[in-house]
Image 1 (cartoon, rainbow, N blue to C red):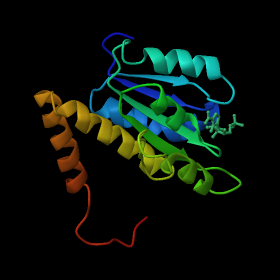
Image 2: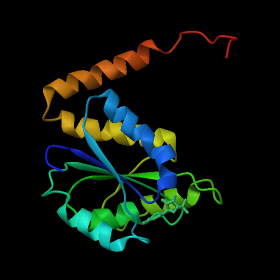
Image 3: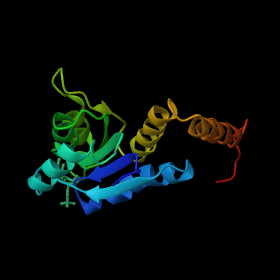
Amino acid sequence: MAGTPIAIIMGSQSDWATMRHAAETLEALGIAYDARIVSAHRTPDRLYAFAKKAKADGFQVIIAGAGGAAHLPGMTAAMTPLPVFGVPVESKALSGQDSLLSIVQMPAGIPVGTLAIGRAGAVNAALLAAAVLALHDPALAERLDAWRARQSDSVAERPSDES
Ligand SMILES: Nc1c(C(=O)O)ncn1[C@@H]1O[C@H](COP(=O)(O)O)[C@@H](O)[C@H]1O
């Protein structure tokens, strides 16, 4: 997809509840993305087609979320030179520990930048992807600074009894 710098891929529709936080963060920063379901296990041909063409299609960073036996980020990284950030989706059986370990323990030579389990990881994957793009995009760098400033402003100095 020409002109769309970020691809968000996920192993299943069920991952969207987590991965939409990456999408919303990119939207808040004014960064275009393409979100799609791609599974190393269930749709290997789709993964191959996507990963092999991702760079030629104009993507610059890939955010890949998966749960359980989360091979999607690593398999994607194996087939593209683009930076891949992996988000471990919280699994029911093992609370995302399985997802985290599946994604983080890549063999030397094929890196996946692995984030935290769940929503925090999805948000931070988007922020890292934005930081990569901002290296060559001063306007985006300013929006990222403003996003962080708003976050700082939103943190009260003292705890409240409310909420
Ligand atoms: N980990 C992977 C991969 C993959 O790594 O290719 N494909 C699907 N899945 C994961 O299976 C979990 C359960 O999927 P369902 O909810 O569809 O049963 C999801 O978290 C998905 O990421």
